[in-house]
Image (cartoon, rainbow, N blue to C red):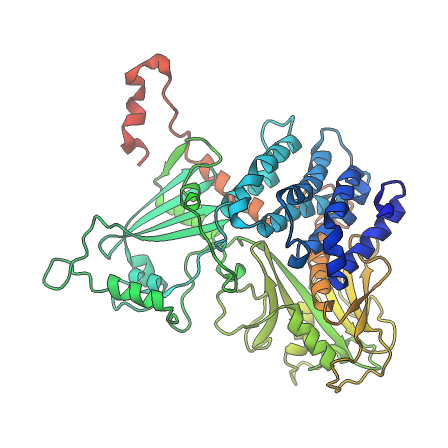
Length: 585
């Protein structure tokens, strides 16, 4: 702990690297001292040069639930305070980063990510209690400006989404939607049938959200869609004021009851379902493996004009609305990353022979299984496929995701070798264009940084066996190579950004968890490095959420001013425009 006292930056960095490794292999000991560690980090966060190492450590700890299982409200407050301290330093008027511009942009993105990751770690009933502190710190970080910056605006929007719910950032496909939205046979009828299910549709802009309400052909059913920078929310509602009538009556409802019963039983949806309008259907997989809880305030907040107090702007130009939806719904509601994976067999050194490998060692296979989830690319509508075509590039891939982002792994061993492509150009078309590559090196030799010839030479994460014992490519011994050496190779001009140092040794059990976090951090920094022209241009790195916010603002600017609250000086007649709700609704 003495190494974190702030006197020697080099010592602090080494301690943080050691603590990052201990977070995986010494979890019980780490959990005991987390409060003390966080207190010390909050005291040294004022040093911006240490920020990348501190936030990298917090990103890793936030991915390991046992380390914060016993956290109190004050512990979480320490974490938020550490992340938000850097934003206040970064945004201070006239502040010039002592680190590289690319690194300062990366740390800024990482600061917001820490807020997101750790806010999701807080129990849902307790999240509301943290909002006053986070709100104040975010506003302090923008003090002196006329308005908060876009990154802060989307942070508030994201917090409004997750303070009262753990629901996904986009709607999932459901059997109930299939039946209700198809006014014909009551089964999945395709996108056209879903469009024809609406009798009427109206759209309003409320604050930073675009709300669309569609009355459906099925009597009493209404679809409400809220598009916000941080995601898309869909409500499928039945108005109980419209009675449910049976055979012999006008417009008998023979579907609602059976559909609700089928939904309760959880029967599977139709094969190859048409993806709903959902704000990046293939870039925000449904979190089907998590518990979903929703508090009442979630509904009101998603349909409110937050953060604008009361402005309501109706949109009438249907073509303009369709153009907005077309562009906005193609923008992902989470961050997407793609990372290449290559297996280097014993004795291999050349690009083509490495790419042609169709399998790796048992240890490599176990590593892939721990790195992410195996997804079927055929008919995939839930998961970002990273440009992979089913069949052409293989039928399966590994991916990992949460409510904030997703990584699609381009594993060369899972892509087919083709007789007409002896140089494996199809594999290289994907892996060569990835900014980050994970290299499992069983060659017994040093892996050259430029082994794969490509213009995108940014980061290689090298994994090598370290325990004593032979490298047996076909051994099933689970104890073989129990520890592995992880090294991060960086391109020319790239500063240190990951909590690794020269190298780290990690157990086989925790290897996938460490490499997953490293690949995420590496792809973020490599993206910033490329966006800033290898750290030669002072350019802001914008996220998908910021781009969605910008598109909504562009649309809102075409609508003119909204309703203004009446002035008391105008008396009751000043309320005329406000009282005449047809001007807005």
